[in-house]
Image (cartoon, rainbow, N blue to C red; front, side):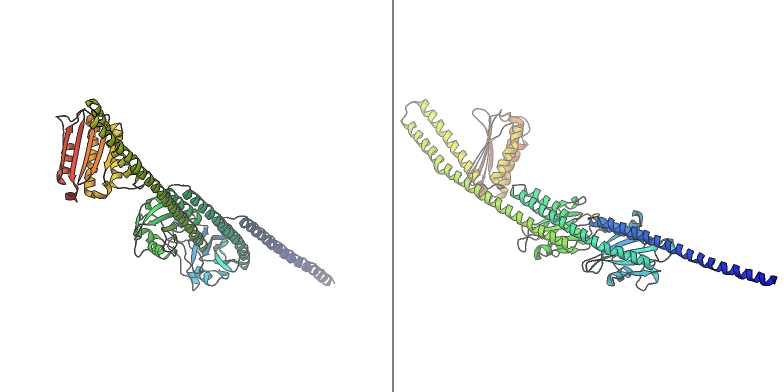
Length: 575
């Protein structure tokens, strides 16, 4: 009986313990589910926070950085990257990384271009999870000094129906593999990221268009308001860099033959070394863009920079070159470049830069036409003044001189005759000066003829002399004097004025040039005259120049004090 009672009590205890055990299992499972729910809730909250964070930003570079950081945190990965695919869908043109410091990045030879596993995601844009990268058939290994990586999760980012790029995550925290939940949450982030990227791209394009319109208006206003063309060209380079969002920009204009180019304006912190470089024509990228009118984009512009003679240390990466003008009327090219490892230029950037270059070329052409019109109007006005001086003023002065000369014949007072002759001489000198003025008026602005260079020599001597010498030119100096003879003329005039400034202590000087069978230069002053002692190397040089051309040189004292230098060479023999 006792044993039966004990057995019954044992059965009762067993029946009581079994539900207790089942309850503990249920509670443990419930706790596990609650923990999982909390974890899922936390990850969903983190996902929502990430979506809000990237959706509130409009700068594309910042958006890409935040997407990469959010994906790395959500999947608990050590390393994360976002690769942007080019518009042809063939390779990576931008790579944003998280988890590597600057030293790690500097040690890597180059960023991935889209081969191996990364290329597989480009060709087949579907989520991909791997426990060991090295065992996959598409694996190509890593560059030298690349951190070791094994576990992998890749998810494509789509913008509408276009694959914009891929998220790459490696090295799951704790050493485990990426799970399906990681894939789901990163895929959800990628979906939201596509919307944020589209908004940022639209905003970026709108900003670029706004900058393009502002830059075009600024350049047109500057040109049409009379700003120096060189300053406007520098402005074109500056605004081109801003429109393209580039590191540096340059404007290269074709020379008169169209067979070579000179870089006339640059913008960018590292662009100054290329200013003034000449790019030869022929089979170069610059020449091809100029000749065909078709832009060219290069992933690496180092070869083009080398063709232009740029310093070897200039790090030129992606390059975009567009013509400055339309086919057949292009003035040169505009080139924008990024540094090595920086993003390539997109179709949208190319279209904007083409439009900007077209507007800038039109503005430059209109400004040139306006300058030509103003130049023509000025020349016509000068021609009218010259004709009035020749046909009216000179004729009246000549008639007055003739009348005075006839008066000399009928006067009996010698003093009156002398004064009249002196007045006639003054009138003759005035006529010569007016003729010189007529020749000067007929010279176009910017002309570098012999007459203009002679005036430049005389102007340069005004400061050391302390006064402006008078100048008289009689005859077609620009047309009848050979270039070699003209060079000697300028040298002699400069030496003569220099001697006056150093030795004569004069208060006035006159430079007169006559062009006929001989070229005659006379320089006279009212100074102390030529000293009988001292160096005479300057006078000897002038004499040697005259003898070399078959001419002669002489000096004489003026009656009232001072010196007259005469340098005469035959023009026909010299020619």
